[in-house]
Length: 419
Image (cartoon, rainbow, N blue to C red):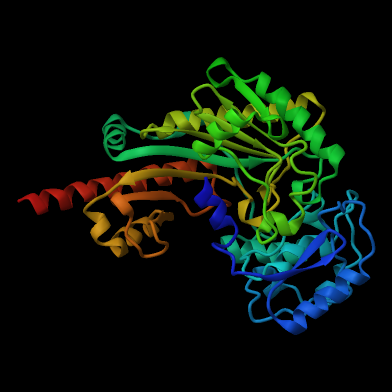
């Protein structure tokens, strides 16, 4: 989970200069004197926002930011002076503005997406910026294409011979995605009231899970030292986002740790994060290679959240063209990441060959030191690249088929090396 969070934040953030403060809020400096001076002026001129806290302030930009060469995001490439002028005074009913939306991308130049959504209205209000960003990130055009969802695990093809191979080569399996409840703000723009209301709906959902998935909800603010140590040791505990990260710069760390928590069942094969990047991140996982069983648990979790929302007169945030909605445009559509840790000693000798095969199945391999690097212990993290435009079943099936092909080639290479 920690590696995934690092990837979300654009990898390791460049070291920041000492922060400039306004009250108790510290404004990060990026090391460009002219830009940092401009930021200081914008902060000083920004009126108070009802979402502000003692530790965080939302800026209101009076003009399009004078982006530097260090700003790499798709938001920066999309936002023109004309678009800024058109949208700068637009505000959602929850009080989220264009300035709120681009703040993380302005303050943290290394981010790849550079724009966040504070509620579901943002996807319509700011679509002239968001849709090109989605197209640039996913290769999917929400203006002309529609998304599809399919959470029926019986449609997966996972024959016994492939299942046996997965059992031999795959060390662990995980499927995760975000779910958000319509009518409540997203964490980057959430009010304290909405955050607690979301927590209440999710706690209700957890009590309605079928018996194998039942477990306990742990509010972050109520963890004992022993519970915290246990969750930390397993890599399950999420931390307050720092100011250099996407979530910290976007305001998702306000009022920490209120309204946030972690749910897991006794065997820790299902896990839910409440009010981190999204209202709910659902995760199903286990040691070994039973991807179909993991996907079944994932679908049960998703359906339970949906049922709980509907019993409260709500629904999940979802549209025909964007699929499931979330804080960051990188996680739209299915928002799903299905991954396995698989040991491939022979293919590990030729990472380029492994990457070439993965590309044919739209999979993303991660070695131990980034792109084109071998993996320590020959253990690779293989996951689906795509999020939107394909159903959940289709994406998991691609992963099954691609990893099956990798294992078959691994065995061929091992046999050849032994002869």
